[in-house]
View: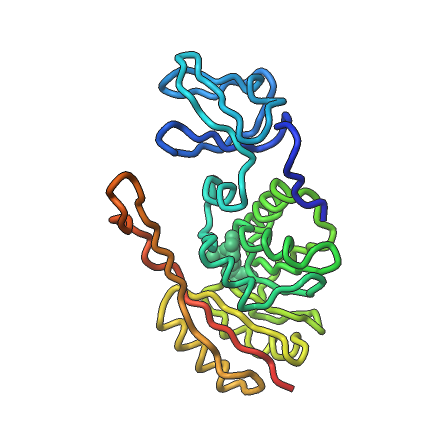
Length: 263
Ligand SMILES: C[S@@+](CC[C@H](N)C(=O)[O-])C[C@H]1O[C@@H](n2cnc3c(N)ncnc32)[C@H](O)[C@@H]1O
């Protein structure tokens, strides 16, 4: 895995985030000779290339913007995407509850837009291995593109265009992480693929799906009782005397269902 290389001046071909005076973000790829249009005039990409991360830049009409290399959250949230992704608030807990460690062998499905795959690859590092099952060829390609845009080449990442409900070929897998509509079909395959003590984690938006998954795990046997939870993230507004939770929040994404294989 090449990995990210933050630091140094902003280079042509890199993605950057422009933050306007109101805090709104736009992501773009730096290309010599190009313009970034705003309603307060243009910014020349050439005025950004060579500047340090976090620099100030101005439009022709004098509006001030900040320019940054995107963090993972900024990159993912500003992607033009056609599949539902796992949001950053859930990716952190997934890495912890699946206990993803450097050198781990992980099977995930499906890759979708590749948000989770990026963080799994960073967490396992170059000595680990990630296999992403994806049933749709278009998502397999877009997931691969997103991963490459953020991390560069990842020789330890294999994308298999296959239906994971039909089986997992690998053995001695440390973790199986599923973001699929019907993960219960994968339970017997995960039981064969996982090492003893290995973790099966699923991510499901509805309670009906959660119940079906928990029932299937219990029916299969050979797993610990599933732990089920959701993650709340409540942003706050802090300005002058106004110190309170924001009025609108993203209230639900999905539940995490986690269990371990027993020998
Ligand atoms: C919600 S998206 C995954 C998003 C991804 N976790 C991310 O963070 O960007 C679900 C993906 O699972 C894929 N999928 C659905 N059923 C599948 C199956 N049986 N085998 C493999 N992939 C499947 C879909 O094509 C879709 O790309």
